[in-house]
Image 1: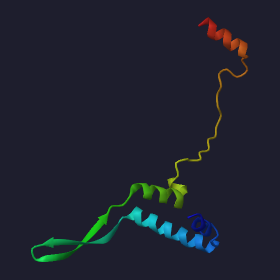
Image 2 (image 1 turned 45 degrees about the vertical axis):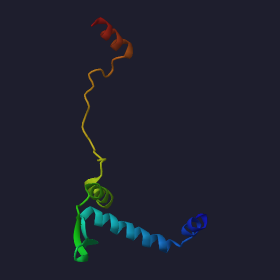
Image 3 (image 1 turned 90 degrees about the horizontal axis):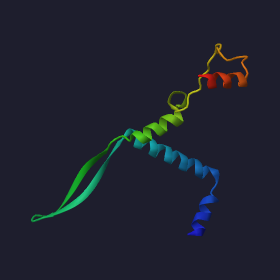
Length: 107
């Protein structure tokens, strides 16, 4: 097992690119949903019948969110950068801390 893991980490970067593309495609497939064919066999009095069923995997919202946050961070990331401008009016500007404490105690 260790030898197999060791060989995996010694692969050239080209191999990593291929795996990255495979994972990207799998994520996209999961995000969009897909169909696959499932084969089964049923036993009956007439013998064994082979059955073909088309299965549907619904789109996965978690995969969609992950895809959009990484591919379109300008529109989908959680953190937004906001710039604010203007003047802040501080009614206590120029008043010492000691004077503010006195005001609080007198209330």
